[in-house]
Image 1 (cartoon, one colour):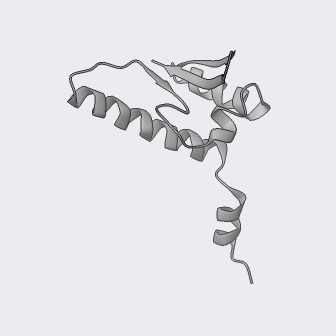
Image 2: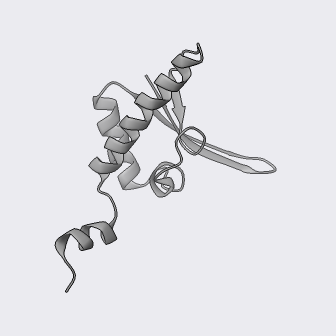
Length: 97
């Protein structure tokens, strides 16, 4: 029989869990750069944060993306989706503070 814990794991992370993981990465990203004498004020998903691609890259402008944007902006972040098509497609969410 499938346990509730196993079912949660199969279902994937909730939006709040994804945002919590992002927050942890922002903190470690700042610390890593600070240790190298750099000040950062922006994290680009797909470049600086590779988790939850279905939300931050492929999900740009989806309902879940807009909800994540809203929650981050309530915390004072600026959130923008970047999409450029040239020889290659470049897409990511820019999160700045």
